[in-house]
Length: 138
Image (cartoon, rainbow, N blue to C red; front, side, top):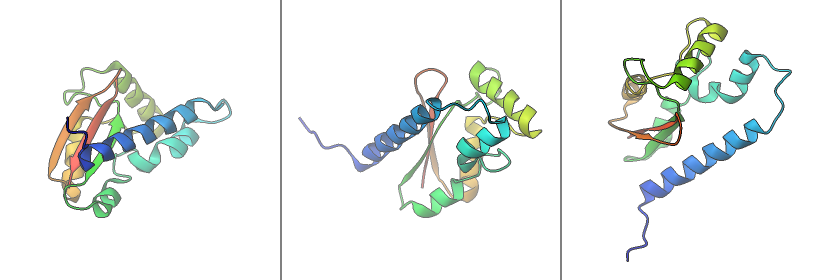
């Protein structure tokens, strides 16, 4: 039996574990004194960007990765027609209320933003619940 795990998949697993741990620690805190804008800036803007356009770390990730490296976003992706994933659609509504023109994104949005900076190949994996892993390869 081959027990060797390819580097690409071990990197994906590590990234997913770190995202889960960050999410769990965020849920354990009391945020009753915060506005939606404060929470967004604290937990979301680093990936989604200051204006919630999904471009906060895409170029930085591309520049930091070696050829063949993977940029992974764990998100409540909405289908390209914006018809399914009620949780993601409700998050879009919340972001629209808080920021005026922000939204939770689709696979097509992710692919477009990542293509703009040079990513070449894309993969989308459904996870538990409403979450998906959007993967862009350099």
